Image 1 (cartoon, protein in one colour):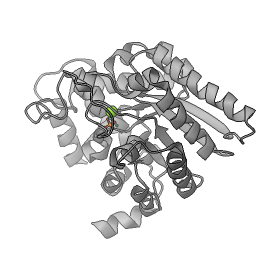
Image 2 (cartoon, helix red, strand yellow; image 1 turned 90 degrees about the horizontal axis):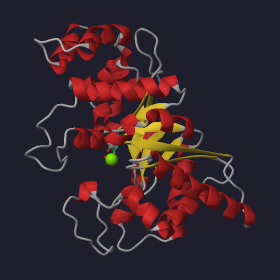
Image 3 (tube, protein in one colour; image 1 turned 90 degrees about the vertical axis):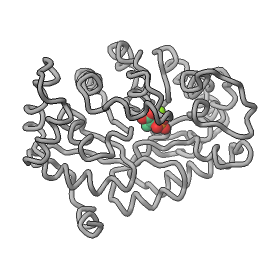
Length: 325
Ligand code: PEP
Ligand code: MG
Protein backbone atom coordinates (compact mmCIF):
# COMPACT_ATOMS: atom_id res chain seq x y z
CA UNK A 1 0.00 0.00 0.00
CA UNK A 2 2.63 2.47 1.15
CA UNK A 3 4.70 1.89 -1.98
CA UNK A 4 1.59 2.25 -4.10
CA UNK A 5 0.84 5.65 -2.49
CA UNK A 6 4.46 6.65 -2.89
CA UNK A 7 4.15 6.01 -6.61
CA UNK A 8 1.28 8.53 -6.78
CA UNK A 9 3.38 11.29 -5.25
CA UNK A 10 4.18 13.13 -8.47
CA UNK A 11 0.98 12.29 -10.27
CA UNK A 12 -1.34 15.28 -10.71
CA UNK A 13 -4.50 14.86 -8.63
CA UNK A 14 -7.19 14.85 -11.31
CA UNK A 15 -10.46 12.93 -11.14
CA UNK A 16 -11.39 10.49 -13.91
CA UNK A 17 -13.71 13.12 -15.38
CA UNK A 18 -11.00 15.78 -15.41
CA UNK A 19 -11.46 17.86 -12.24
CA UNK A 20 -8.22 18.96 -10.69
CA UNK A 21 -8.22 18.73 -6.90
CA UNK A 22 -5.55 20.51 -4.84
CA UNK A 23 -4.46 18.44 -1.84
CA UNK A 24 -2.81 20.44 0.92
CA UNK A 25 -1.55 19.40 4.36
CA UNK A 26 -2.54 20.22 7.91
CA UNK A 27 0.53 20.96 10.02
CA UNK A 28 1.61 22.82 13.13
CA UNK A 29 5.22 22.11 14.07
CA UNK A 30 8.60 21.87 12.35
CA UNK A 31 8.44 18.08 12.47
CA UNK A 32 5.47 18.18 10.09
CA UNK A 33 7.39 19.92 7.33
CA UNK A 34 9.13 16.94 5.69
CA UNK A 35 5.64 15.66 4.83
CA UNK A 36 5.34 18.30 2.09
CA UNK A 37 8.19 16.65 0.20
CA UNK A 38 7.10 13.08 1.07
CA UNK A 39 3.50 13.47 -0.04
CA UNK A 40 3.99 15.88 -2.93
CA UNK A 41 1.18 18.01 -1.45
CA UNK A 42 0.28 21.33 -3.07
CA UNK A 43 1.10 23.29 0.09
CA UNK A 44 0.04 23.68 3.72
CA UNK A 45 -3.66 24.40 3.89
CA UNK A 46 -3.79 24.79 7.67
CA UNK A 47 -0.83 25.67 9.84
CA UNK A 48 -2.07 25.50 13.44
CA UNK A 49 0.11 28.19 15.06
CA UNK A 50 -1.17 27.43 18.57
CA UNK A 51 0.78 24.15 18.66
CA UNK A 52 4.05 26.03 19.21
CA UNK A 53 2.36 27.76 22.15
CA UNK A 54 0.95 24.52 23.54
CA UNK A 55 4.28 22.67 23.62
CA UNK A 56 6.27 25.61 25.05
CA UNK A 57 6.80 26.07 28.82
CA UNK A 58 6.13 29.84 28.56
CA UNK A 59 4.76 32.26 25.96
CA UNK A 60 6.95 31.96 22.84
CA UNK A 61 8.62 35.31 22.26
CA UNK A 62 8.09 37.13 19.01
CA UNK A 63 11.60 36.07 17.88
CA UNK A 64 10.75 32.41 18.40
CA UNK A 65 7.50 32.79 16.49
CA UNK A 66 9.33 34.56 13.68
CA UNK A 67 11.94 31.77 13.50
CA UNK A 68 9.27 29.08 13.20
CA UNK A 69 7.25 30.93 10.54
CA UNK A 70 10.43 31.63 8.55
CA UNK A 71 11.45 27.99 8.64
CA UNK A 72 7.97 26.94 7.51
CA UNK A 73 7.97 29.35 4.57
CA UNK A 74 11.50 28.39 3.60
CA UNK A 75 10.70 24.68 3.60
CA UNK A 76 7.50 25.18 1.65
CA UNK A 77 9.40 27.18 -0.98
CA UNK A 78 7.05 28.12 -3.80
CA UNK A 79 4.14 26.19 -2.29
CA UNK A 80 1.53 28.26 -0.42
CA UNK A 81 1.17 28.08 3.37
CA UNK A 82 -1.98 29.22 5.14
CA UNK A 83 -1.27 30.27 8.72
CA UNK A 84 -4.14 30.29 11.14
CA UNK A 85 -3.81 32.86 13.90
CA UNK A 86 -3.84 31.52 17.46
CA UNK A 87 -6.75 29.24 18.23
CA UNK A 88 -6.28 29.01 21.97
CA UNK A 89 -8.94 28.72 24.60
CA UNK A 90 -11.65 26.09 24.39
CA UNK A 91 -10.00 22.66 24.28
CA UNK A 92 -6.60 24.23 23.53
CA UNK A 93 -5.33 25.47 26.88
CA UNK A 94 -1.93 26.96 27.65
CA UNK A 95 -0.65 25.73 31.02
CA UNK A 96 1.10 29.08 31.67
CA UNK A 97 -1.93 31.24 30.93
CA UNK A 98 -4.09 31.97 33.91
CA UNK A 99 -7.16 29.80 33.59
CA UNK A 100 -10.51 31.43 33.49
CA UNK A 101 -13.25 29.04 34.51
CA UNK A 102 -15.80 28.67 31.75
CA UNK A 103 -18.89 26.53 31.75
CA UNK A 104 -18.75 25.98 27.98
CA UNK A 105 -15.14 26.53 26.89
CA UNK A 106 -15.77 25.49 23.26
CA UNK A 107 -18.25 28.33 22.99
CA UNK A 108 -16.27 30.59 25.25
CA UNK A 109 -13.47 33.08 25.18
CA UNK A 110 -11.25 31.57 22.52
CA UNK A 111 -9.51 32.06 19.18
CA UNK A 112 -10.29 35.39 17.46
CA UNK A 113 -12.43 36.49 20.43
CA UNK A 114 -9.46 36.27 22.74
CA UNK A 115 -7.24 37.73 20.01
CA UNK A 116 -9.38 40.84 19.64
CA UNK A 117 -9.78 41.32 23.40
CA UNK A 118 -6.03 40.89 24.05
CA UNK A 119 -4.72 42.64 20.96
CA UNK A 120 -1.11 42.64 22.19
CA UNK A 121 -0.88 38.90 21.67
CA UNK A 122 -2.49 38.86 18.26
CA UNK A 123 -0.60 41.92 17.07
CA UNK A 124 2.76 40.43 17.89
CA UNK A 125 1.83 37.22 16.14
CA UNK A 126 0.73 39.09 13.03
CA UNK A 127 3.93 41.13 13.12
CA UNK A 128 5.98 37.91 13.29
CA UNK A 129 4.05 36.47 10.33
CA UNK A 130 4.48 39.61 8.22
CA UNK A 131 8.18 39.77 8.98
CA UNK A 132 8.68 36.07 8.27
CA UNK A 133 7.08 36.54 4.84
CA UNK A 134 9.19 39.55 3.89
CA UNK A 135 9.38 39.62 0.08
CA UNK A 136 7.08 36.57 -0.17
CA UNK A 137 3.38 35.81 -0.29
CA UNK A 138 1.59 35.45 3.04
CA UNK A 139 -1.77 33.81 3.69
CA UNK A 140 -3.39 34.30 7.10
CA UNK A 141 -6.79 33.18 8.35
CA UNK A 142 -8.77 33.80 11.50
CA UNK A 143 -10.38 30.95 13.49
CA UNK A 144 -13.85 30.96 15.06
CA UNK A 145 -15.12 34.08 13.34
CA UNK A 146 -18.85 34.33 14.11
CA UNK A 147 -19.56 37.74 12.66
CA UNK A 148 -18.29 39.73 9.67
CA UNK A 149 -17.22 42.54 11.99
CA UNK A 150 -14.68 40.24 13.68
CA UNK A 151 -13.05 39.62 10.32
CA UNK A 152 -12.97 43.38 9.71
CA UNK A 153 -11.27 44.00 13.05
CA UNK A 154 -8.71 41.26 12.40
CA UNK A 155 -8.01 42.63 8.95
CA UNK A 156 -7.55 46.11 10.39
CA UNK A 157 -4.97 44.71 12.76
CA UNK A 158 -3.03 43.27 9.82
CA UNK A 159 -3.20 46.64 8.06
CA UNK A 160 -1.93 48.46 11.16
CA UNK A 161 1.00 46.09 11.43
CA UNK A 162 1.82 46.56 7.75
CA UNK A 163 1.90 50.32 8.27
CA UNK A 164 4.10 49.90 11.35
CA UNK A 165 6.61 47.69 9.53
CA UNK A 166 6.67 49.95 6.49
CA UNK A 167 7.42 52.94 8.72
CA UNK A 168 10.24 51.06 10.35
CA UNK A 169 11.87 50.23 7.05
CA UNK A 170 11.09 46.51 6.91
CA UNK A 171 10.62 44.74 3.59
CA UNK A 172 6.93 43.84 3.46
CA UNK A 173 5.47 40.64 2.08
CA UNK A 174 5.01 40.73 -1.65
CA UNK A 175 1.33 39.98 -1.14
CA UNK A 176 -0.94 39.32 1.85
CA UNK A 177 -4.13 37.31 1.52
CA UNK A 178 -6.54 37.23 4.44
CA UNK A 179 -9.18 34.57 4.92
CA UNK A 180 -11.68 33.23 7.39
CA UNK A 181 -12.36 29.78 8.77
CA UNK A 182 -15.99 28.84 8.46
CA UNK A 183 -16.60 26.91 11.66
CA UNK A 184 -19.38 28.80 13.42
CA UNK A 185 -22.83 28.25 11.87
CA UNK A 186 -23.77 31.94 12.08
CA UNK A 187 -21.42 32.51 9.12
CA UNK A 188 -23.60 30.32 6.91
CA UNK A 189 -26.07 33.17 6.85
CA UNK A 190 -23.50 35.93 6.30
CA UNK A 191 -21.71 34.49 3.30
CA UNK A 192 -22.96 37.12 0.84
CA UNK A 193 -21.71 39.82 3.16
CA UNK A 194 -18.48 38.05 4.08
CA UNK A 195 -17.27 36.74 0.73
CA UNK A 196 -16.69 40.08 -1.02
CA UNK A 197 -14.40 41.10 1.87
CA UNK A 198 -12.18 38.01 2.15
CA UNK A 199 -9.50 36.56 -0.12
CA UNK A 200 -10.49 32.97 0.67
CA UNK A 201 -12.46 30.72 3.01
CA UNK A 202 -11.46 27.51 4.71
CA UNK A 203 -14.14 25.32 6.24
CA UNK A 204 -13.26 23.94 9.69
CA UNK A 205 -15.63 21.02 9.49
CA UNK A 206 -14.73 19.68 12.94
CA UNK A 207 -16.06 22.71 14.73
CA UNK A 208 -18.77 23.49 12.20
CA UNK A 209 -20.19 20.00 12.74
CA UNK A 210 -19.86 20.24 16.52
CA UNK A 211 -21.79 23.51 16.58
CA UNK A 212 -24.35 22.62 13.94
CA UNK A 213 -25.35 19.44 15.77
CA UNK A 214 -24.68 20.86 19.25
CA UNK A 215 -22.52 17.80 19.94
CA UNK A 216 -19.25 18.29 21.83
CA UNK A 217 -16.41 16.90 19.68
CA UNK A 218 -14.45 15.99 22.82
CA UNK A 219 -17.26 14.13 24.59
CA UNK A 220 -17.21 10.44 23.66
CA UNK A 221 -20.90 10.01 24.50
CA UNK A 222 -21.97 12.42 21.80
CA UNK A 223 -18.98 13.00 19.48
CA UNK A 224 -19.98 10.13 17.18
CA UNK A 225 -23.68 10.25 17.77
CA UNK A 226 -24.39 12.09 14.51
CA UNK A 227 -22.96 11.53 11.07
CA UNK A 228 -21.14 14.32 9.21
CA UNK A 229 -22.01 12.51 5.99
CA UNK A 230 -25.68 13.28 6.45
CA UNK A 231 -27.94 15.53 4.40
CA UNK A 232 -28.14 18.45 6.87
CA UNK A 233 -24.39 18.84 7.21
CA UNK A 234 -23.56 18.15 3.57
CA UNK A 235 -26.17 20.73 2.53
CA UNK A 236 -24.40 23.29 4.70
CA UNK A 237 -21.06 22.39 3.12
CA UNK A 238 -22.54 22.57 -0.36
CA UNK A 239 -23.92 26.04 0.36
CA UNK A 240 -20.44 27.30 1.27
CA UNK A 241 -18.90 25.84 -1.91
CA UNK A 242 -21.69 27.33 -4.03
CA UNK A 243 -21.40 30.78 -2.49
CA UNK A 244 -17.63 30.68 -2.95
CA UNK A 245 -18.05 29.95 -6.65
CA UNK A 246 -20.72 32.63 -7.00
CA UNK A 247 -18.39 35.23 -5.48
CA UNK A 248 -15.32 33.78 -7.22
CA UNK A 249 -13.46 33.24 -4.00
CA UNK A 250 -11.47 30.07 -3.31
CA UNK A 251 -12.87 27.71 -0.69
CA UNK A 252 -10.89 24.92 0.98
CA UNK A 253 -11.97 22.45 3.64
CA UNK A 254 -9.43 21.59 6.34
CA UNK A 255 -11.39 19.51 8.89
CA UNK A 256 -11.06 15.76 9.46
CA UNK A 257 -13.81 15.01 6.97
CA UNK A 258 -11.44 15.66 4.06
CA UNK A 259 -8.96 13.11 5.42
CA UNK A 260 -11.33 10.18 4.98
CA UNK A 261 -11.72 8.89 1.41
CA UNK A 262 -15.52 8.74 1.74
CA UNK A 263 -15.56 12.31 3.09
CA UNK A 264 -13.28 13.58 0.33
CA UNK A 265 -15.47 11.84 -2.26
CA UNK A 266 -18.53 13.63 -0.90
CA UNK A 267 -16.76 16.99 -0.82
CA UNK A 268 -15.52 16.75 -4.39
CA UNK A 269 -18.99 15.66 -5.53
CA UNK A 270 -20.57 18.80 -4.03
CA UNK A 271 -17.98 21.10 -5.59
CA UNK A 272 -14.84 21.32 -3.41
CA UNK A 273 -11.66 21.56 -5.49
CA UNK A 274 -9.21 22.10 -2.66
CA UNK A 275 -8.82 20.03 0.52
CA UNK A 276 -6.36 20.12 3.39
CA UNK A 277 -5.53 16.77 4.96
CA UNK A 278 -3.59 15.10 7.67
CA UNK A 279 -0.36 13.91 5.96
CA UNK A 280 -1.07 10.16 6.25
CA UNK A 281 -4.39 10.66 4.41
CA UNK A 282 -2.90 12.08 1.20
CA UNK A 283 -2.12 8.65 -0.32
CA UNK A 284 -5.51 7.01 0.34
CA UNK A 285 -7.50 10.12 -0.63
CA UNK A 286 -5.52 10.73 -3.80
CA UNK A 287 -5.78 7.12 -4.86
CA UNK A 288 -9.59 7.31 -4.46
CA UNK A 289 -9.85 10.65 -6.32
CA UNK A 290 -7.90 9.40 -9.34
CA UNK A 291 -10.60 6.76 -9.78
CA UNK A 292 -13.55 9.04 -9.11
CA UNK A 293 -16.10 10.28 -11.60
CA UNK A 294 -17.14 13.44 -9.73
CA UNK A 295 -20.14 14.24 -11.94
CA UNK A 296 -21.48 10.74 -11.51
CA UNK A 297 -21.01 11.00 -7.74
CA UNK A 298 -22.98 14.24 -7.73
CA UNK A 299 -25.76 12.73 -9.83
CA UNK A 300 -25.99 9.93 -7.26
CA UNK A 301 -26.17 12.01 -4.13
CA UNK A 302 -27.70 15.24 -5.45
CA UNK A 303 -31.30 13.95 -5.26
CA UNK A 304 -30.86 13.10 -1.57
CA UNK A 305 -29.70 16.63 -0.89
CA UNK A 306 -32.39 18.36 -2.94
CA UNK A 307 -35.36 16.50 -1.56
CA UNK A 308 -35.42 14.06 1.27
CA UNK A 309 -35.74 10.67 -0.35
CA UNK A 310 -36.52 7.97 2.12
CA UNK A 311 -34.94 4.54 2.13
CA UNK A 312 -31.22 5.04 2.12
CA UNK A 313 -29.25 7.48 4.22
CA UNK A 314 -26.76 9.73 2.47
CA UNK A 315 -23.86 7.68 3.83
CA UNK A 316 -25.39 4.42 2.63
CA UNK A 317 -25.94 5.92 -0.80
CA UNK A 318 -22.37 7.20 -1.01
CA UNK A 319 -20.90 3.94 0.25
CA UNK A 320 -22.84 1.92 -2.26
CA UNK A 321 -21.75 4.32 -5.02
CA UNK A 322 -18.09 4.02 -3.92
CA UNK A 323 -18.16 0.24 -3.87
CA UNK A 324 -19.85 -0.01 -7.28
CA UNK A 325 -17.21 2.18 -8.95
C1 PEP B 1 -11.82 22.44 12.42
O1 PEP B 1 -12.45 22.92 13.35
O2 PEP B 1 -12.32 21.71 11.56
C2 PEP B 1 -10.37 22.72 12.28
C3 PEP B 1 -9.72 22.40 11.18
O3 PEP B 1 -9.72 23.30 13.32
P1 PEP B 1 -9.36 22.53 14.68
O4 PEP B 1 -9.60 21.06 14.45
O5 PEP B 1 -7.93 22.87 14.95
O6 PEP B 1 -10.30 23.15 15.64
MG1 MG C 1 -11.63 24.49 14.62
